[in-house]
Amino acid sequence: MNRLFHVTSALNRESIRTHGLDWTRMGAAPGIAGATRPEEEGVFLCEEFTADFFVRMNNTGGPVDVWAVDGIDVELLLTTGTGYQYLPARIPADQLALVEEFAHRPEPVPDSSGAYASRLTVTLDDDD
Image (tube, rainbow, N blue to C red):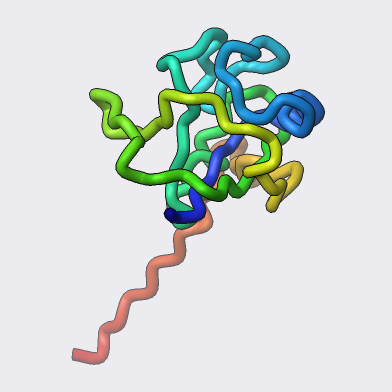
């Protein structure tokens, strides 16, 4: 059994602490991709290295939380047509630990021209 992760709006924090992860309780905030109702009958989960992708995807309109989920048999996960994995079951609160609070999607930084600046730096080496 692996430790998996779930990313959700921070608005859901108290409900999750009380009821665990339960897609039938969706309503306080949109899903991480912006959906206003469950996309699957289950809880989307990911590996630790993928959690940042979902934090950056954040279409909830506010801060998000990252929850560690213990005790899940990965063989029970189903895969959507778009490649995301979910557990077709509710996950009780005692299997969860809040590991990151108020993670925000990085906002683009406008430069002086009014366009958005990139954080990418390109260095050319002419010493051939």
